[in-house]
Image (cartoon, rainbow, N blue to C red; front, side, top):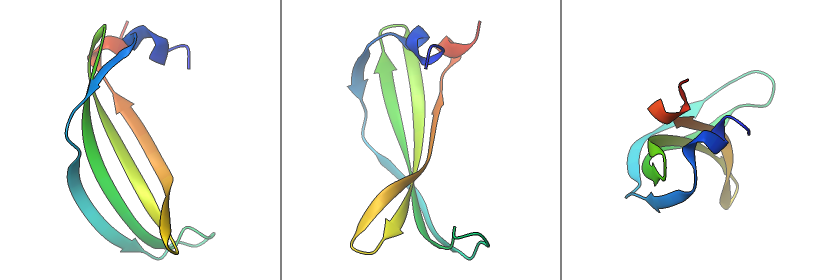
Length: 75
């Protein structure tokens, strides 16, 4: 979490961009339907791209994967 603090405060989230939906059969309980979105974000120390993959859980979704990418995180 300390590394993410380099971004500063979140200023704005852009419009969510649908990337894809997929069904996976994975051993170990990871099977299911997954939906991925790309979200542009603006922080006080730079811009970032957030990629979120959601896993269908019956009538709702849970976060399966979360990735934050920004040049502001590079020292």
